[in-house]
Length: 65
Image (cartoon, rainbow, N blue to C red):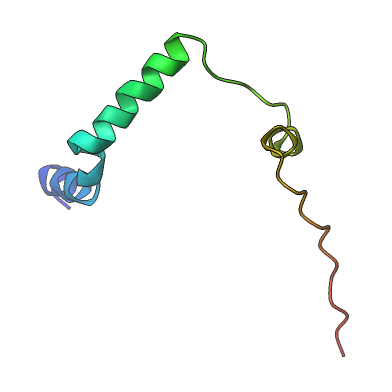
């Protein structure tokens, strides 16, 4: 595929990213990160605990007949 055509196809597919609403969220996120308003978690379980969500139950394979 022609690189220019490929770039336009990608741009059309990702047009939502360039909407004013999405860009406002991007700016807000960048400001939060720059101000240190973020947390890093070592594991997904630590994040779930911090959010106060119930932990998912362990997956148990269903025996085959």
